[in-house]
Amino acid sequence: MAEQPKLLGALPSPFVYRVIWALKLKAIPYEFIEEDLTNKSPLLLKYNPVHKKIPVFLHGDKPVCESMIIVEYIDEVWPQNPLLPKDPYERAQARFWIKFAEDKATSVWRMFRSKGEELEKTMKETQEMLQTVEEHGIGEKKFFGRESIGIADIAFGSVVYWLEVIEEAVGEGAVFEAHRFPRLHAWIKNFKQVPVIKENLPERDWMVTFFKNRREALVGSA
Image (cartoon, rainbow, N blue to C red; front, side):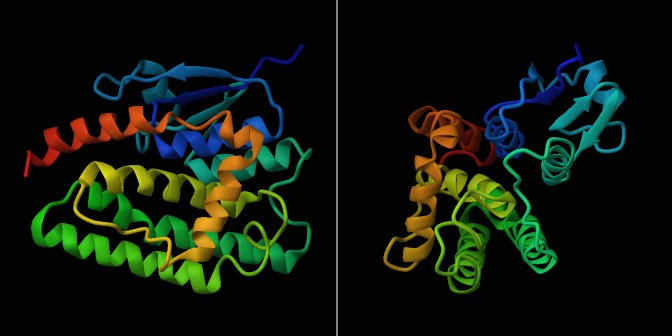
C-alpha cells in the first residue's frame, strides 16, 4: 500500500485550509503534522528550505510548497472530482482569479496587522478588491464560472471566510457589507454550505477570539 501523503501545517492558517479542502473534496486520506511556527521543526526546514513556511505537502519524499501550487498538484495527481476545468480558456480564467487572489488579498492580512491610517488604507484596498470580484469574478453561476466548487473558489474561500473573522476581530467597522457585495455574500453562503467545506471550517467564535488575541499582541489595544 502506498504511503499516505502528509500535510505540514498550523491552524487556523487559511493557506493550510486550502489544501485540506482540496484533499477532502477528492476524498484523499492524508496525515496532518501540526507545526509550531515559533519553533519550526527540522521536517519543515528540510522540506521547505527556501521560505521555511507552511503549508508543505509531502507526496512520498517529494515536497510541494505554496498553497495553490499544492492544490493544483493534487488536482493533477488525483483526477477525481476535478477542480480545474477541462476547457483551456476556462482553465486560464480560473488561474487568472487565483493570481488575483494571491496578489490582491494581501490587504486582508495587512488589515489584521494595522491600525490608524494604515488600517483605513487596507480596509479601502480590501473593499476595492472585493468590488472587482463582485463585478467581474463571480458571474451568474453558483461558484466561480461553474456550478460546483473549483480551484478559484478554494483560493477565495480562504480569503473571504477569514475576512469575515478578521473584520470582527479588528472591530473598526464593516468591510464585507451584504448590500454592497450581494453576489459575493451569496457565493460564500453557497461555499460554506457544501458538506465537505462545512465539515472542515475552523469554528468561527474560536477564530474570532484567536485573532483578537493575536491582534492585541501585534498592534496593542486601541
